[in-house]
Image (cartoon, rainbow, N blue to C red; front, side, top):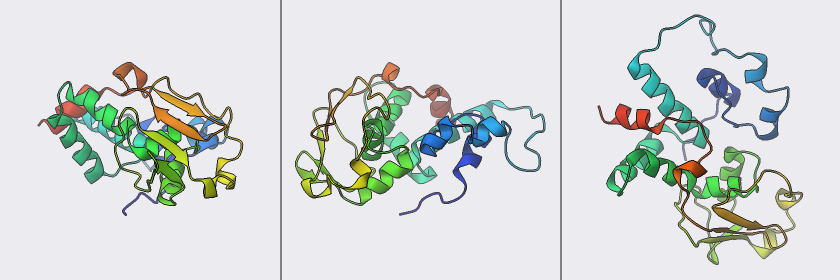
Length: 205
């Protein structure tokens, strides 16, 4: 499986926004964006005039990197969103939010989406009673995620309380390590600052 292996903090600096790729480090004074709030590279501090295409590209890149997808994965997700009923941009964000790795992150099992992706591939989760180890799988309302009995003593599942608030469209029981998708997230439930219409315009050219 292809994945990004370079420095994660460079991505936050390039987008000029916190993408929360390093877990707790992003909330501390060690955050690279807090120390150097300009783009990486020799010309990172230069003044640049951004074109309409540049704005659209930056929104796409920011959203793609926020969820930890590569270009082909993101484009396939966008193509699925086009075929769905409703607004394409909102459909795209819903599909991204309903990925298995994102759900695991949102429930507080991991401090970042990359950590959640790695955790899923190790196979400690059950989806509706069956093993689920594919990070990109799309979940639906009513799906129940729980931790296998044999994996519950793993250090990964200790001290989960208070890590992050669980969104209203999800429910999570810390005692049983069980989470459920209560409903499909609406646009207002997606808390990332992104203008999805720019992404639609970019791919529609």
